[in-house]
Length: 469
Image 1 (tube, rainbow, N blue to C red):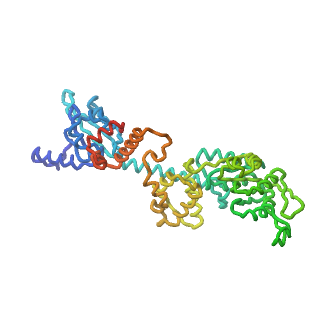
Image 2 (cartoon, rainbow, N blue to C red):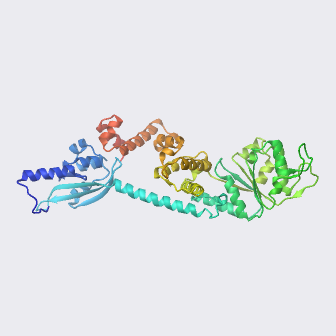
Image 3 (cartoon, rainbow, N blue to C red):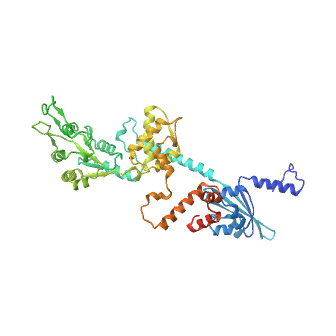
């Protein structure tokens, strides 16, 4: 220790008082032990940073604490064994991370007298580093998503993805686009089958239009005339001839969404169109050749419908030449950030307003299972965009369904266990997860024990028996 001319201490008592004050008010944790590892002095900061209760420090040596797994590691133990200074980064059970440095003090004969331990909390620093890295990742995802947006604003032909799973799907779709065989798109509602159909049409280079029709949205008695068209006088009210959607899709693509809802009589006619490439209007006497690509989509199980005689087997085989199953969003979570920023950028361009999204919002959206898939995600982004203030989307602006999912999530996803466990093992897993969570949420083991309403010794035994580090 160095001393300047300004330092004036009348006696050792005054010096000791000054050093005690410094020891007590230090933001770093300080602990001094003897040659056997028994703690002699420690400050409040040491308790707060390590989460080790005073009862443990008062009764157990550093070696015993490590043997009992009360601490993950101990630089003091290493210093005692080697008589050299040691530093180690330790993740404590309370969620704090600290640099633990132990410095041995030796007598003139090189015998160990004491070990001075210094514990510096780096949790906040690491959190800042983590947030910086997350910001970089978000920015990178943002940039990659923007690369997929064409400058002319033609968004419908874009497939936004980052996952390897969707990369394989998109690659297959691009290959399928080079021929005229029917394509069958399968997947849950909202996964983006219409976007995929538009992508296939665009990649195929057809000069005609992309015509979309929902087979379940039009009454059966009107659907046939919409698809095939009609001649003048074909029925009451047909005062003039009208082209059907099949004709309008000539040299282009017709997308038959919800093909599982196509009425049974029309399934026969569609099969004939697929086989012959010809259509005949209602009330017409001649057939017309059409050169169109047919893409069908459904979220129904067509094979089950075939077995139930609700869908023609021959039509199913004819449509199922090139099949693509688009996975739900919960199975490709890497795509979520890219989709979020894609939809967000579209809104920014539309309303000429920049928007920022908080990190905890992105985490919540990443954790959500999205039963409505990309359609639901798009709606949530749009809703949050219009509800936000000061150009920032915050957690409170998310729908209650997403916020509640975050707040009520069980540890280890116990509510969704795939395996059946004996009750004893299930209880053990729950206890381990629950105690680990509380240890992270509290500053000391005593606080954790208080929340669990158990003695500190019971908590120590539980940690040991459950293998909690």
